[in-house]
Length: 473
Image (cartoon, rainbow, N blue to C red; front, side, top):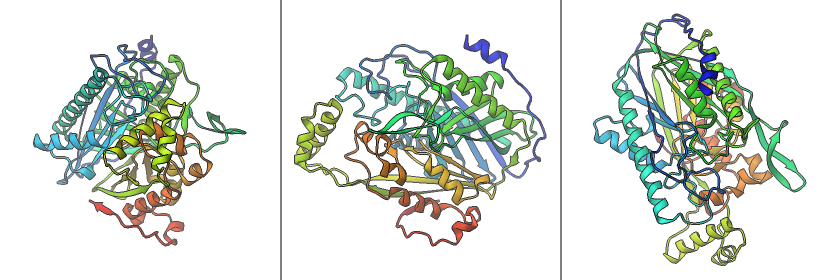
């Protein structure tokens, strides 16, 4: 039924000369790979799930794009249909690529999780989601899938690197309207419900990669600030991001479509909870990508400058041992399990970490485009802030990138409280909520990595906040 709908919407026009011939040095290659498990495995995303999944509603994928400007080292963008790929898997992928003679530098590797809630659980992500340890055999299959995903990511990145050819890069932007703020204020606190008056970012930035003559579409890359939570089924499915990929694959056979998530931690798709809605959202997003790439786009030139900086995001006051013991007796199984696991750490003589390591990544394509990549479930305030502080016409902000350790609240959300500000930390296994002020730490780090020519005049007049951090370029 879905294929009929997709085929009815096929649109095959790609202008060959919508932008100037970009013969100044780009090479690009793209590849994608099926990452659907062939064995039962527990799905992540929803704590109400109690059994392994062996049903496939739609297949899931990893999609890789390799870019190189003149004699620079290659850069790689990869999108993965999963609730969250951890930093440990990212590190292992880079290690295996280097061992295979296909080294990708840490700062030149952007790993985007699509955050679908209908994909297999991975080792180290949302470890306390179910309020209990998984049975040993189920954990073995989670570990098995984690290894399978790692190997497939390495394979598809290697294929993308091997396919690099002279290319043109352009970018543009559109808008999609199915995302709405999901933090609704009520008399009893904030509910996860549609908030028409809450902040949202419905921008759809789009990167287009074509052959040097402009006649062949190699890849498209887009991101949208919205949770991939249209569905709550206990079946494998890529949600709206996966459906957008499927639609683009039907429209442009042989081209690879990468769909990432912006700062959508407090944004939900509406309407939701039915398969027809996830199809509509995915097709609508794909249609907007097609509209954008068939309009005049802005050429991208190099060099492609990539930098990272790791900072520490401090937690609020850690619970005492007595407080952990009291929580371990809580009637809520998630609260109790969370406390028991931290008590076990203390009994083993381990120190509960006071802060979270957090790697900010900034790329800029010459003076044409600034890309800010942030780990975790980042709320929309961050993208709106950075588009104010930097040239909004040249700024693209992603969340869920390079790691998904927990929610990353803004100062506003932290002060308001609720799920994104504090409660979700239990499922991610973090000891407590963050301390006040992490938005300032992140914003200061980003500002240090962004070239001055992207900074708006208003921000240039402000003194940068002092912050000690390590920078890799």
